[in-house]
Image 1 (cartoon, rainbow, N blue to C red):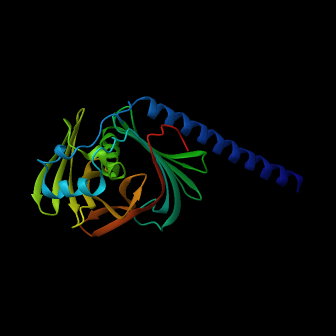
Image 2: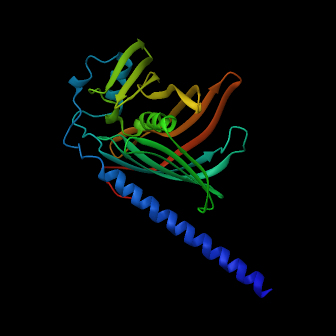
Image 3: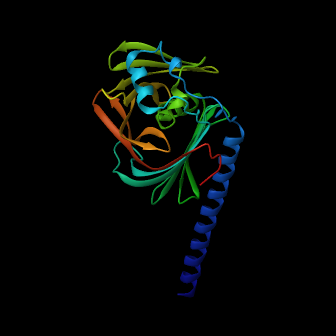
Length: 270
């Protein structure tokens, strides 16, 4: 009995030490992310910036921003929701925290379930996905060009949480399609990605669609749906988001997030 008790105590100590080490490492990465990007909050949104944009895009910016709105430089948010570790897996509850930079594209996200921790990031122009069990056993460590592009696409799609990032610039362009749809193109370094963006009559972005690597050599249609817009810290943003794959055999949702808290231009971890 004593041996069993000591083994249990040792396992608990190992688990606690693993969580502490994982948290410390994540904090270092957050600090590194923020250190790589500049503060651009002196720039402000002007209505004359959007006069040549497609009508639904103009409608969007007039709806979610106010003239004189400062550009967002840094973002931090927390969320809860549901997540699937595979398309054939069951939904599991998840809690997450995420940090973004805008002047230099970047983000880091940590999602925690009862058994696993996933870390998605785009830093130093590189994408990576790491999954660990109980903060100890690494079971996934995805890197390379496929992840560079995929994580950059995630950064673009989640710009709806800091919409000054979607204003036109040298690297970002909008093209007209119809009264409720427009094409978004972003060129950054050697990456060029595009999204089919859908808007409702209010001017809210409701969906962003692109093709993304689902496997190393195969792209599929990837969609992010947004809803439940609320004013948070002076900006109108969606507070629910759903990510899914649109395959030949149907749509397969794997992430449903609810934003709990979002703060701008506070480059530090919660």
